[in-house]
Length: 331
Image (cartoon, rainbow, N blue to C red; front, top):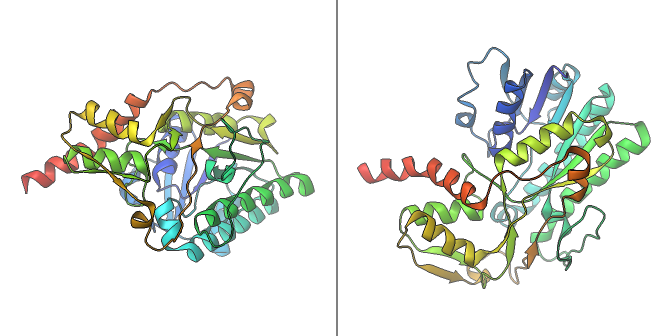
């Protein structure tokens, strides 16, 4: 079994949960994070653990990164700018973080020939009209004046770089495309829809649905995402391949808002907010009408089936945000 795991961006939502899983599996874990969007508090359960170490630094700092990669057995590259709101508001910074960070991590992994798992996103499918997305489907983007697609393009380039390293040097790299992972510790700061809706519902505030609300998504519980990610990283046959990791229940965004209201017994009303009002820095904002994964390839390799329901996800996020609401009410 690989003994030491390095997680870039490990103080973030997915990274911190992955770190806990790796510790449970007996790994030594090193997290590298610049704490720009990740939070040290996400790692509170691990900070005093003898097999855990947090390094505050940036993946683009080769002097910092190189020795960490050298002494790792497997690298999980999760560090990235994420969230539609952040991408639209700071497109240049987001693109450079995603492209340069991946370039440096892949170079160091190649230098030391380390097993590496690269986190990508369902956003790479863009405007593909397919009813569900398989890994070999075409990627369809809007024109370059639409900042929204810069994130998808940057992550697609990350994937191209990873596969090129595999083909040219035999680097044992796998790519995973996450589909709307949700759960405890996920921030609503960057436009993540489910935690945003849950936090609004807990406060009985209006739930703000962008556009018509008819756009549909599937959501994935953090435990399912971490389980698939971990098992792929430990599977030698996953090298050089791309895998979707996602849930199986499709729901429109407006129906999601209604479900959250019912589940949390909230009196919140649902407000439809036009895209031009929600994203003032992006004229003619474009969204994806559907985002549903085909996970047959993942299931074939590791027998993956989601174990958690959408209501499980809502409850998990609500349990995380509820103490925050109760603390605010007591002040």
